[in-house]
Image (tube, rainbow, N blue to C red; front, top):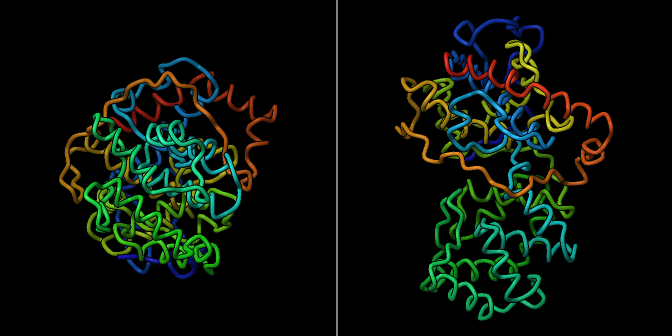
Length: 380
């Protein structure tokens, strides 16, 4: 079910009715969201502490400091994505090697983005580029692309990322990758790039993508976020959100069944009131070089907190019933990149001297920052 957040007026208490929450634990709070009273669990406070600790790790790594970057045993043992979706390695590859590399005509950017994201695996993109050159819709050939992918598949090459479940659209081919190539063809030939760009708002663009076979609510939203990183679109990430399965699990752990059906409004609450809750818990969260957490980031954080809570809060149940964190942390020797859509206006801030000072400050005591949060997380 899609829930539009749009205008948040009327969803939350007006300023004059907000509780004085500074210093109060989650168990003492009653939050007003979409006309309901939500009583947070301990996982609600873990959400903010996790965000602070995980982001401190990211800043320390961007600053170039060798690990360990945290004393939190759960963060040390397990893999968690960054607080900001655009900071993750796959998003960084999309930004630097796909979206802003090559022909910047919108039709070509759309084609490259969907070709990359349908597989969501950098090695698959590199495989195609090595065999065929820079991917272009103008020179696209199903037979050529399918031959490369089918050959790799036959030799055991993994074509898809495990991050998302990519259902195969039923478009007549035997293999999943062949059907996804047919899907891209269908999108391009039905003027989807033009229709997405012409949409009045983010929800309208989302509905264009969702109409295609094999693309449900969650994937349509994720693909739109990726397309919106480019210069060809200008939607505000605070316009619209689609809660994914992992986020719904995390929301259930934070609020219980009282939040069922209003998950999008809950995500907006987190985005709109983030400073209030960081301050309440005495946490310093600097943002992404001045950029606040957006709806997509708060949505993703619920997914990560759901995983974290399986160890930190094993008695608080979600929806899936999962009790283990599957992915262990494995160091990646490849250097981190930190480059973001120019329209966000933060790349200059990242390279400014004052930003380097802030990075150095965050890097000087990463264990102190993270261990304080980690102690509260582990004991919370």
